[in-house]
Amino acid sequence: MGVARALAVAPPVLLMDEPFGALDPVTRLELRRVFQRVQRELRQTVLLVTHDLAEACALGTRVGVLDAGTLIACDDPDTVRRSADPRVKPFLEAAGLSGAA
Image (cartoon, rainbow, N blue to C red; front, side, top):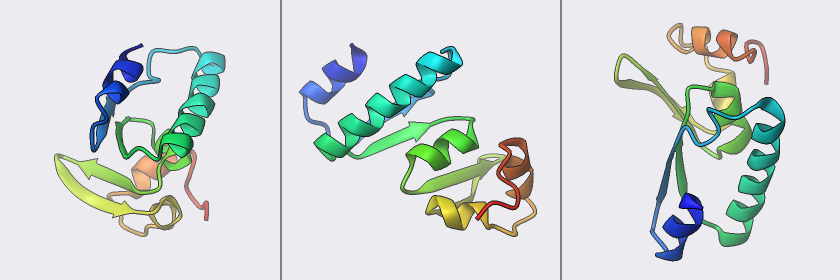
């Protein structure tokens, strides 16, 4: 309901802070699919904040990685997955994305 209210005013950017974080895995997956469909249909720019790098890579067209308040990576998901930056690697490993292309 909150997303519908936010979209009703047609903002230039929609900020979503951990929108799927407190959901069970089945509901989380279903709502991610709904989110992707709605985003495609509305062509809405969304800034999605998440601690789940796998989720960010699955949903985002650009992914940023912060470490100690510093943006250490910001690119398309495939480029971030291939990062050799030693500060990014722990995030990739924790998300099960290390070695992925």
